[in-house]
Amino acid sequence: MGKEPEDTIASRISRVLADRIVRGELAPGARLRQDHIAEEFQTSHVPVREAFRRLEAQGLAISEPRRGVRVASFDLAEVREVAEMRAVLEVLALRHAAAT
Image (cartoon, rainbow, N blue to C red):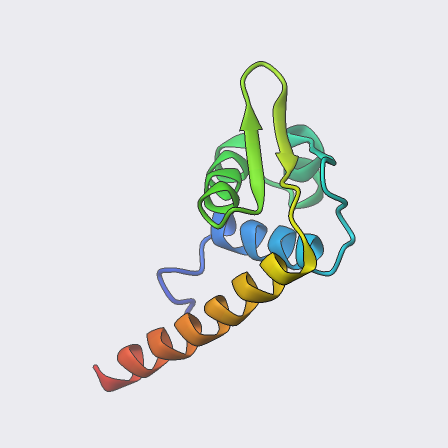
């Protein structure tokens, strides 16, 4: 069985980083180093930049011009809300995918 089209290296990187942020392994304000992440995932910088854009869209990271990308600051209630919404949306997406 092959990988699903949505399971790209960029989506995998963003999922791993999001999990690290939510679990507190990456502290608010911590710099996300593009070169280090690319090396860790053995990929080019392009999927890492896409992963950063996904994290920004989720409110988990902030891009600062000429300074790079940092983990967003948020409180525990915001993290819980994002995790709950994500869980509900992923279940809904799976139901729709299974229906086709």
